[in-house]
Image (cartoon, rainbow, N blue to C red; front, side):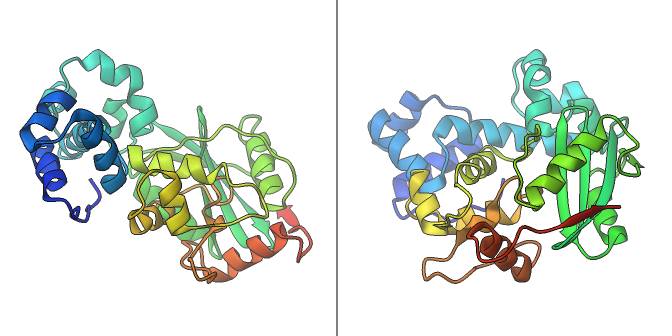
Length: 286
């Protein structure tokens, strides 16, 4: 899992360490650390952004990923990670891993990603889709650099670059992303592939209306973790769906921009456009 700062209450740290060592239900965990289940649930989420059950599920998933990446066969990796039933992983594996466990083990081998690049007022945007929806919107100035980033995420996937408008599945999704970048109405399925905590943050970002901003601290507070501003910032930095998951709408408490994966000038331009201080961005499809 992402590195987690120690909680100020040693009982919460004890609870987290116990979950790292063994699988415990909420009641047993609460007894072990001397808190009631209700208090442990609330305070654990406030400190770490996840309930004990969610933390345990994420720990199992991380173990599965490590095993698959190390080359273990799927069945061995599943049981080593603590999954009692392989069927449960295959039922939900695509949502959590972004693909079936076998494909994840092979670095995306057998998975086909169609992608294209469009020119926008924010620079170039690489749009990649799987059969489930848009999995990446990467911003930059160099298509080769953007492609390299996509290959790093899916090193053995088949990446198929398609000229815009020449693929009946990709074309409407590229148009939807272009609409989003130009501040026009858009609708397209997206894949939120990340940890349980990252997905909570990204889903919260998608609820921030255009033209509004939230501070990292306020967003953390809304998620029930008042000391989690840094964790929220890390989740924003890990967002691979520029604009569709609007991490640009999160700023520092003093009103300054903070960070942005694709550069502060783009963040500034997006915020100014959404707040009506600039015209919508124009785009041309490559």
